[in-house]
Image (cartoon, rainbow, N blue to C red; front, side, top):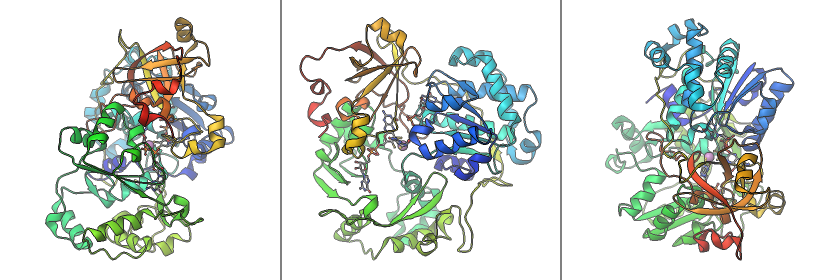
Length: 560
Ligand SMILES: Nc1nc2c(c(=O)[nH]1)N[C@H]1C(S)=C(S)[C@@H](COP(=O)(O)OP(=O)(O)OC[C@H]3O[C@@H](n4cnc5c(=O)[nH]c(N)nc54)[C@H](O)[C@@H]3O)O[C@H]1N2
Ligand SMILES: Nc1nc2c(c(=O)[nH]1)N[C@H]1C(S)=C(S)[C@@H](COP(=O)(O)OP(=O)(O)OC[C@H]3O[C@@H](n4cnc5c(=O)[nH]c(N)nc54)[C@H](O)[C@@H]3O)O[C@H]1N2
Ligand SMILES: [Mo]
C-alpha cells in the first residue's frame, strides 16, 4: 500500500488548517466540528461568515454547523455511500467532472463511472431520506467550486462500512480535481491531540513507523539494523486490533495486556463482553495518569506524567509535529511514559541506551522518511508538517501537489451495504453515539474538572419530540435505553437535533456507560467498531432507589 491509499489509511489531512479561509466550498460530513474540533470549527465559521464560503453539511443531526450551512443534507445514519455515490452520479451525468484532471492524474474512471450509473439521486433518497434535489444541488456546488475542501471525522469512519465511506469521499475529490492544490483535498479530522503521531510512530498492528509494512522483508531488515536487533525478532505477521485482542483473551490466545493511556472499559463497544475479557486475562498492566475503570482491574499500575509534565512531540491532524515542554513537575511517583517503558525494557534485558526524548526522536527520524529532516533543535523554532525529508526542507502544507505519492489517484467502485444492526420490531430505535463540547471520552480527565461537570453533569439521551410524546416522556425525565447487549439510565433531552426514530447519547458518563449498548461489529478493513449505529429501545424510567445502581456491572461503572 502506497501513496494516496496510505495517506488515507494514515488518515492525515491532505491540506492545512490555515488554508480553510481560502476555500470557497466546505463539504463537512460526520464531523461535529464546533464541538469536537472547536479551533477548526472557528476557521470554518470564519470562512463562511467573513469570506463567503458555502458550507455543505452532510450529517443526520442538527449540529451547530447547520446554522452556517448553505445546504444541510440530513441522511439516515449509515447511508453515506448511497448519498455520495449519487453525488458522483450527478457530476458524471451532467458533465460536471474535471476531465483533464481525470485523464492526467487518475486511473480506474471507467469502472467507477459504470458503478455509479445506477445511483440516481432518487434511489439514494429512498435509502437515505435526503431529498433528490438536495443531492443534485450538492453535486453542482461541489463540482463548480474553485477550491473545495472535504472534511470528515467519526460519523464517516465508525461504521462497518467506514473504509467504504472514506473511499467514496476520495472518489468525489478525484472526479472534480479538488485535491493537490491549497484549500482543497481530503481532510479527516483526527481525534486525540497525538493520535496522528501515534499512528506515524507505528502504533498500528501492521506497520512500523512511517506506515512501512511489517510484511515487507526489506523493511524488516532496515528496522532490524536501525534498532540493533535480530531480523527474526521482528514478526512478519501483522498483530491484532483492539476488538480482536478482547476476543483473543476469551478464546485463550492472549494471556497479557499492557494498556497505555486508554480506557477500554468505557470506550470499547459491547462493554459486558470487554469486562469479561479484562477480568479474566492473566496479566493486566495499566499505565495512566489516573486510576481509570480499566486500571481498577489491573494487576500492576504504572503512574504516568501528563502532557504538561514532560517533553517530547505531538503530531496534529494537519501532520504538524510540535514540541511540548514541561510546565509542571510530575506529582508523586509519576514518570514520563518513555521513562517507564525504558526502565521496564532494561529489567527485561534489552540493551536500550536512550537518554532523552530528543535521542529517541533521532532514531525515529533516521528510519522514517516523513520525519527524516526533523529533530528537536529544529522543532524548537516551531512546528513542521510532514513529509519533511531533509534538514533544509521546510515541511509540506499540501499533499499530492502535481502528482499523487502512489502515481495516479485510484477511483474505487463501492457498493452500498447497510449497517450490521438496524432497528426492528424488538429494538425500534437507532442509537448513535458521540461527543459534546464539555467532556472528553470516558470523562477520566474532564469529569475531574468541577467547572465542566457543573455545565454538563449528567448523561442525556437526545430524543425527538414526536417519539417523546408517544412514550409519554417529558424533557428532563429519566429514561432507560436498552439494546441486545445491555441497559443504561439517562435523562431525556427532548430536541429536534436528532430525527424521529433516532436516539443520540455520549459515552462521557461512567454511570450510564453507553458502550454497554453498542455493537462490536467492525469494519472488515480498518476494524473500527460501528459506534454510530445500533438498535435500541427506550422507555420511561421511574427510579426505585438510586439510578446509579441500575447500570451494570455496578462496581466497575460507578464513577469514582
Ligand atoms: N469535546 C470533545 N472533543 C473531542 C473529543 C471529546 O471526547 N470531546 N474526542 C476527540 C476524538 S478522539 C475524536 S475521534 C473526535 C471525533 O469528532 P467527531 O467525529 O466530530 O465527533 P462525534 O460526536 O463522534 O460525531 C461525529 C458526527 O457524526 C455525525 N453522524 C452520526 N452518524 C453519522 C452517519 O451515519 N454519517 C455521517 N456522515 N455522520 C454521522 C454526528 O451527528 C456528529 O455530528 O473528537 C475529538 N474531540
Ligand atoms: N460509543 C462510543 N464509543 C467510542 C467512540 C464513540 O464515538 N462512541 N469513539 C471512540 C474513539 S474515536 C476514541 S479515540 C476512543 C477514546 O477512548 P480512550 O482513549 O479509551 O478514552 P480516554 O478517556 O481518552 O482515555 C485516555 C486515557 O489516557 C489517560 N492519559 C491522558 N494523558 C496521558 C499520558 O500522558 N500518559 C498516559 N499514560 N496516560 C494518559 C487518561 O487518564 C485516560 O485514562 O473512544 C472510542 N469509543
Ligand atoms: Mo478518536
